[in-house]
Image 1 (cartoon, rainbow, N blue to C red):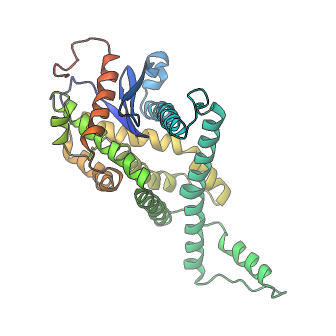
Image 2 (image 1 turned 60 degrees about the horizontal axis):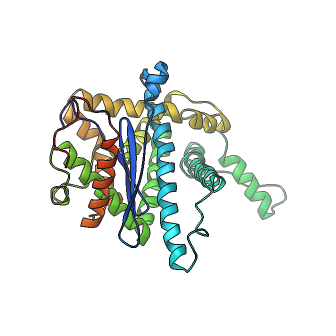
Length: 339
């Protein structure tokens, strides 16, 4: 990719793709009748409005928050298009095919956040603590005076949850458990037919971005030949986040399970910002070898999270990219080959 080239990001959505340029984004979704519908808008540059967000770490956290917000909007649009198609197919008229409400979206986000905190923060912390309590004592005493099973279970649980001060080995085990849960979830999702199509659109997004970065005309023929794994993918970012978390949690630690749990939540924006800076520094410095090492686990994982797209899916991704580029101001950084 040329240094003066516009950096493009993207995301797969339901039966479509969202593409993001620095100053705008566009979503393209394939309807059941074969038509492609699009939605686009200009994006504010947060660092221009709030100069504080130009600082390292803070800019990464800001980019992540904006990306999450944009991703939700894109998914909402694609869901509304798809659900409207399904309701029309079921015999309902256009007026009854109402879009999802804001409260539905908010509820989905809240439930998703709770699930992620429980599965990827709380559960690994508790399991790791139990393991280290057992290793430290050789056994967990669970005998009680009454001898009743629930009293025995409560006594065992209290012993197992005795706080262990996190160390590097502690956080390595915690990180391995977290990654294991993540890999199991991704693998399980890949077995679902609808998710498999989402992963195909994910592959189409990457192939189209590669075509743009190569300076080639945005055609299905050119995109078809590109690889579907991309080093700047969010999958690679998540893997870097998990590795950085191991170090961060080893530095900030307490002799309290509750405090360690709360610290893990509060440190999430900092860890995301640090991970962004690591990937950014590697890419900007031209240290391709370092960047390849950092992103390699994510590239491997993309063998699961991306699938080979068909030509129609590539067409959707190309439409999304062209629409997002149309929202960019005309400057000398605009690459010449945009078909």
